[in-house]
Image 1 (spheres, rainbow, N blue to C red):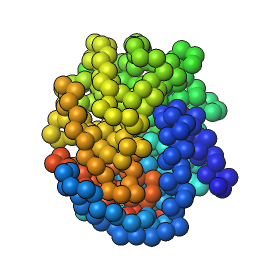
Image 2: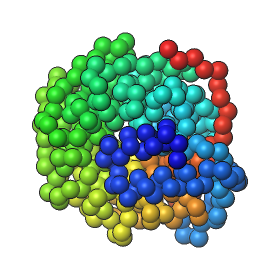
Image 3: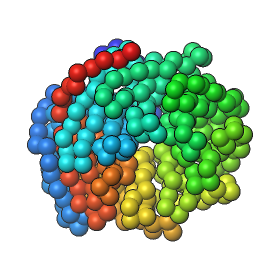
Image 4: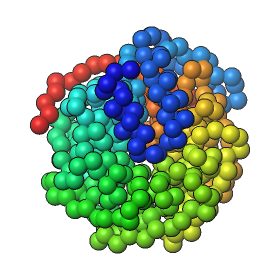
Length: 354
């Protein structure tokens, strides 16, 4: 493994969003399959055995994913120095970023750009609609920026996992930081239905709420050491989150009441998204399936194609769910369970970063 890959693996491990074993599984997929090529598209009905799809193209490993305001999907890379953009029809384009950094999580900003956390570079990045890359350096060394979200106040909000802070950044570059208790480990962050930001404290095993004025309140998860990871605002107005260490899905109401739901079978739940069908969609690494979960806690499973492993997932502009795979693919699953995979190719745009 290259020095750069080691740095990235260490950065991901420090965020604690996935268990160490799960990180090893994702990393293994990305590295062992990087030199092979294969077919770009395959489909499978949820009731049928999935069709094998072949191996990935190139060394690029799509990671965190979000829907942009431009109607496209945007994603970071586990391996590679770029931000990827994909249309709902599968056309891809790649925007190289500073090779000394690492794009971790990503969100659509209110200004039409996409914003990302750069854990290794200790900064926040921005990809403008024209593809230009800009950065805002954080004032404290080793802050460990992790989760990122567009807030209800028109600012970008992000977590500092190592620094135990929440950051608020205006689109013009004004930064405010909110101190958290030592050892909190803030990770993922989302906007709630109550106009506040909600974030996971994966070290302290809590879900927390921060107002736009900076007031923080923490809520303990009853099951110990669940490592709360990805989060999403559900159609029911509650925030839902995955618990990889406990094999559970959690729900927190605007009042802070937490309910947990155990997955039907063993696995490592990671990504979670709210579908157009008002259900939750959950990726489960190691189980090679995606769950659909109703707000009442009922699960239905959809098998994935062979050699696939869905990780992060988001609701797309086309009403489908889109997910990333560390073997170089981006997948789409409709709310009826039809799966299509696209190989992430390697076109570069003209690039300027400053």
